Length: 342
Image 1 (cartoon, rainbow, N blue to C red):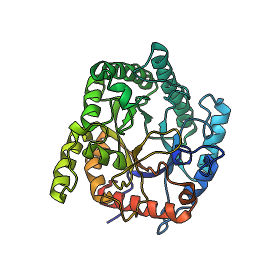
Image 2 (cartoon, rainbow, N blue to C red):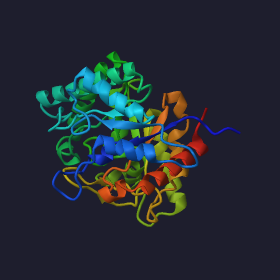
Image 3 (cartoon, rainbow, N blue to C red):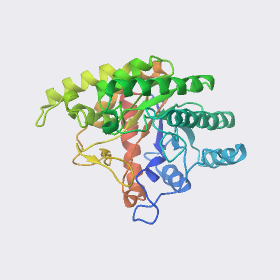
């Protein structure tokens, strides 16, 4: 029986940027270097199919000219890689602003999505991008959200709807990142409530990351929504995991394969969030291949055509080791062999 051809296997470029700071022992890693490492990975003759991009400096100027973007597309294609999902620069200090902030903040959030859609259009026309979504979050913190949970969720939902109109006009979809550091998205119940309030399931869905959603189960930043208690059994985990994935899977059309050791981590200006661990980390809490299956069930019917590895905030020395990427690729191939389709 032939191996599945979908989902396509992508590597994320943002681990070279997120939590990295110039002049420290973890400076940013260039887009070209990340492409080199991705393209060099190989397991039994199989390689990564593409990359997901972070649309901000120093990897991508969100205001780059059409010619500059085409040159970037040529560079990516020269490595035999495609482009999938794009991360819109929605945060204060980039293009955007808080989705629950001032009128100016919220307008800037929508502007960031508009700029991402423009870049997506150019990459699509070039031919290097044939699938994927635009990723967003609320660009604010749970502690700010706590001042007015209902009101702030309503503001975030309204901002997402405005951004979604822009995305739909460009033939794009938005995936909201499920991560404990984002306001109104910091628990599985908050995330579900936000998606339901946005109420645009064809355009605004969920981006599940295995490392981040594991912390949803434990209730970090939202203890009252925890589904697991310390010392849980495998049966406890299975039941809790089913509750969460059954609730969020219908909304899921972007997916990150990842591992978590049950702790939180943050570097640079990035708030503490789910710790991404190497695929073969002995302290990893997840059976990556098995748990990926719950998120990927029915994925093709939701338009999901690729999955992406997220090694966000890996130390630079780990990112620079080719063995790191070979191990990751091997894991992703196992996920596709178990849950893929043709």
